[in-house]
Amino acid sequence: MRKTFLLMFLMSVFTLTTHAQKFALIDMEYILEHIPAYAKANQQLEQSSKQWQTEVEKLVGEAKALYEDYQSKAKTLSETQRTQKEEAIVAKEKEVAELRRKYFGPEGEMAKLQGDLMNPIQDDIYEAVKEIAIQEGYDVVTDRASATSIIFASPNIDISNEVLAKLGYSN
Image (cartoon, rainbow, N blue to C red; front, side):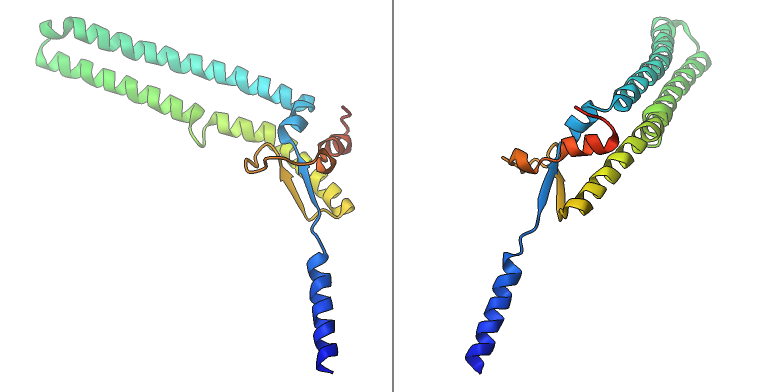
């Protein structure tokens, strides 16, 4: 009886351990390259970034001009005038820092715009991957582009083209 029980126990353990997980890979960079909305969003981000950077550089130029003016006239200015010019320079530098934070800070316009433009694309990709994973019974889907520890993966488990097809893009 004990041998039968032990044998059944070992067989059930063996059966459970032989159930392998199904893995799949996607290449997010490859997928994004094939989505026209992503390229358009990147162009829009680049245009906005250039425009905002121009504004920041203009203020930097104004701050630099104030400082150079101060340097050239510092010896001829009274103490009160020097203090006023120094305060104007500091105020302009604060204005530059505030504008940089407003546009390029963690909660700035660039981050908001990037979220507005990229989140819908990423959400669509996630939903497509999720649907494919459920349909095909994948336990894990890994992004090849961000998984630096993957040295080699069989092309047979790459479902990037299936994701693109699910999104309505053919390659």
